[in-house]
Image (cartoon, rainbow, N blue to C red; front, top):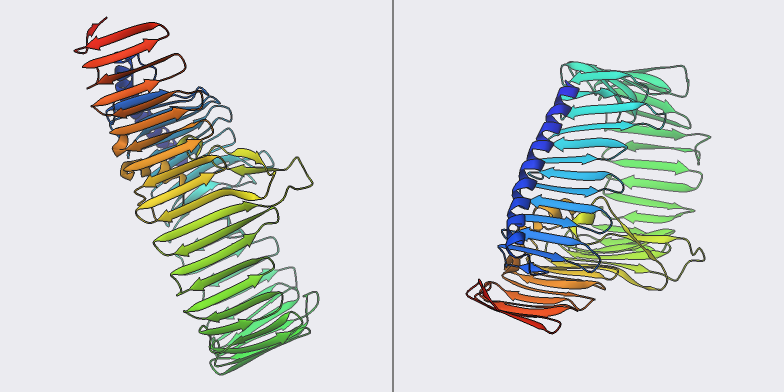
Length: 510
């Protein structure tokens, strides 16, 4: 069944890919042939083709619907939006295919193939011990595959079956779930009847033990810890012994009182979880009452006046909120870099990555993503960390505007309907459909575009420039030639060196 499903996946990918790409490139080819005399073709939202100084090519047709890109280092991108898109890196042989995203995504590489259609996922890969593994899961009903030990498994939920290597367990077996379930890991086997009501374990390790008749009584043991309950949640208790980090015990009589006594800490609850007092070597903590007033000091400090304001600090990193859950501020310290984030949900999102001083290790590199869909999911750039600076910045005023900069590449867009930060699949399939205005620039050049090419201005570092207001006029120039045309060639002029050419009524040239 799994092989048959994978064959259907291959047929679907081939059919959609070939059909959509053929349609897109045929339209582009027809247009390019008709305008082959112009180095960079620009017919507004109808069709356009441009080649950068580094050899990369970008071709578009029918506004944002059809697009083809090629880079000089062997990466290609094709899209017939919103139906299909693909990214392919010929150097690494990695590819991503989207069909009616988010309904279907397929990823391929030398190491593995994987994909998703609705709630169904499949994956084929080779494990570290050179064993071929596979899985086909259709949540929450079908689970089948082969694990790293070469064992096949099959389960049809909730009727019965076996699932290997899931949820941290070696094996999960069930019959008419929740009537009966058995789980195995390396140390023990656990049986469940009417999960989670009745459970017990079988183990050769005396430190691993579980018995439960929920909610009446339960007991569990593992190395250094013993937990039990009676009439849960009324009474629960815990004991810590060596080799646990700290010996001690605790209990909770819900909803009245609780206490934990450890070697390095004392903790009391009154009307848990609302009132809590804790004190120890690592610091002190007070909730009075939770979640409205929270205070903590020590290695990690916290002060919350929820939902009005709160701040949490640990080391050089901190986070805070204002009018929870609307306003959020955050600084994460990663040693060589810091990331600052500010949110005012759902309208404002800001993020900046700040590089610190140069590391003593000159061979260490920093990675950053490009802004074009060609590089999404399959490519990253490297840049030396040579100074303290803002290496990337992102700002979004949803749903009106977004700005993104990665190293020397920046991008501005109007509109920005996607509420989250840059998402590669959205960039490939949806963002161009609602982008009315965009401008992109880097050290190699840039482009400004309005209404999918109704107005377009391009420039490159080698001096190539073009400005088009379709269909009224087009002005272009490069190091070898320059010219202009009106109404798509009704009247035109081109100079190449000392040679001049004029055009009238589209076909008359002299």
